[in-house]
Length: 150
Image (tube, rainbow, N blue to C red; front, top):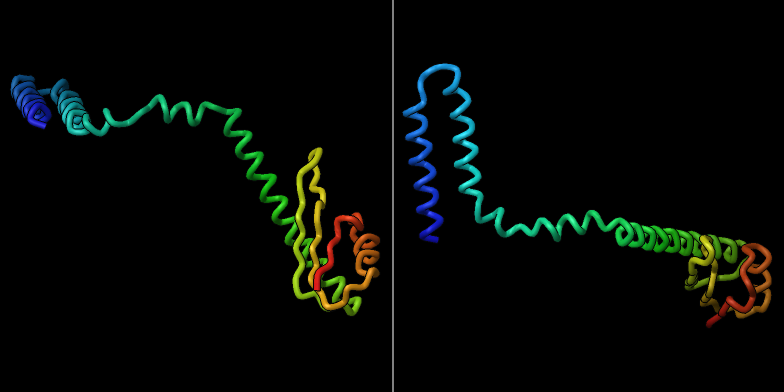
């Protein structure tokens, strides 16, 4: 810390001496901003030393990793929206058919670039096998992926 304060004092004294020794005119108006920048950089020295530019640069330059990350985020968002909308549609469809659904959960996965339904869990008082038929014919869901609970 002592060395840092001495450095700041020396830079300020040097800047003052250079400003005094610089003759009046066109040249002096360019010296003042340069000396100001030099003082600011000296003051910001400890902050600049603590920044790991290589690490930060690698974070942005590692295109493959970031692309894979964003692809995964995109797929998860698509699956979440797909599952939520399908759950709403199933509940609406079954309600129109006169079946009271208390809970519906859809699980989906990404396969070959498409969202594929892996599991549909429905909680209802009516455990009719027609529910699987309705969902299979209306939404194209494999009957073995549909699970009914009371």
